[in-house]
Length: 160
Length: 407
Image 1 (cartoon, rainbow over the protein chains, first blue to last red):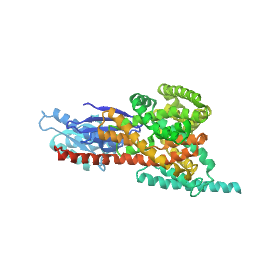
Image 2 (image 1 turned 180 degrees about the vertical axis):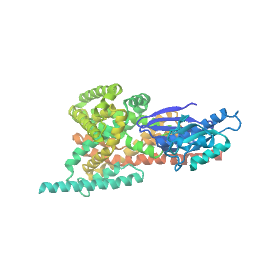
Image 3 (image 1 turned 60 degrees about the vertical axis):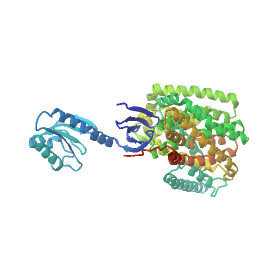
Image 4 (image 1 turned 30 degrees about the vertical axis):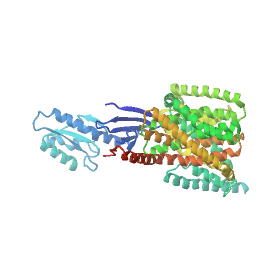
């Protein structure tokens, strides 16, 4: 992928690229650290049609939303040969009983038999998290297990 | 007691002026124009020959305005790193020169025609040349155009203009002091050497300069940066180099996170003292002197709007930007503001030019600070209207289909 990097004096740095069907997308990283998501116009690729300012936390969330399916897809592809095993991502939503508690508190493995492969937070992957890993709202838990085990795990994360 | 009474008057007048400016400023941003013209109008209304002459705030306003100029230039310097200035200059020097030729000439020509001599011409050249980087950056941000392809072109022209100011102001200061052409050339030489030294120091030892002013506690940091800026500005002024340029160069030498924190701390102070500066400029301009130069101001406004459009068009075309983007680049550059007034203020304060120059500069900036944001806003609809008209003509002939926005 060909990413254009343009310095914007006094403002920051802009990076943009063209998608397969010809749309341009980009990000401005401002000097103070906040980012701006850019979508360019279709009829005038020089001009931005949408510019959304994002805080560091918001960019992280967007990055993990976009990045997570890839990881899940990747793990699912590895497990395809093993019959009956699926990979899901479970979100720790605000208000979940585990927002602010540790991964060990969920006792997912004991209760459902499902394994936690990784946790996605703020665009970064934390592989093989330990039981003392502190969960917060916005985390995505990548879990491998049987269909029944995963359904049970989703219920536990939401309701305790 | 007379003293206590005059203090009370000064506080009441200053409070009323600042509060009034606050009301005007809010109104300005709400209707999408810069508050600078309203500050100037406020000054005109309260000054000599205005509606309500104020006399109590003179001593504060005088020094406050000087500090305002120093802060305007210091924050301009803080905005850019030495690296950005050098790359900007390399990338856009040709566009920068086209910009100087097209936009300084009309101001100089009008000054010559009005019989203000070479010094008046030099000052007016600066007034019409320099775009307001404050207004331009704000308008681009507000219109969501920071990501547009033409924006780097616009920004690099602004960088070039700001660097040009660092050469221009010392020359202007020297010429205004009455040193003549040789003295002016000497000032240019000194400016060249100083700026080169500062850029090299900023590139190599920027961290050391930053460390000298940096401090963990905000109030200590504020005092150090402001103190250093006033010291450097005062020394520069004593050496007959412009005080404002001293502050600008200090801003460039401070870099990295120190520069960012300094900007955050100083922005409110700059806004306060710059407002005082604009008001004082208006206060010292007699409103009665404006009508005689209004015709010249309108003519200059029209001509220099076109020349900035042309500059932006030409520079953006060189970077492969399409037609609409070239128009947007030109329209973005139209606004003139704070630095035109800084230049006019220097010229008038020296006494080397007449009050007519202040009147012309005031009227011109009043027009351009409003015309700039408006031009940036209307350029797309106007261009769209023209291209639709042309398309209708084309459709009568061989059909041309516009795909439009589908998503």
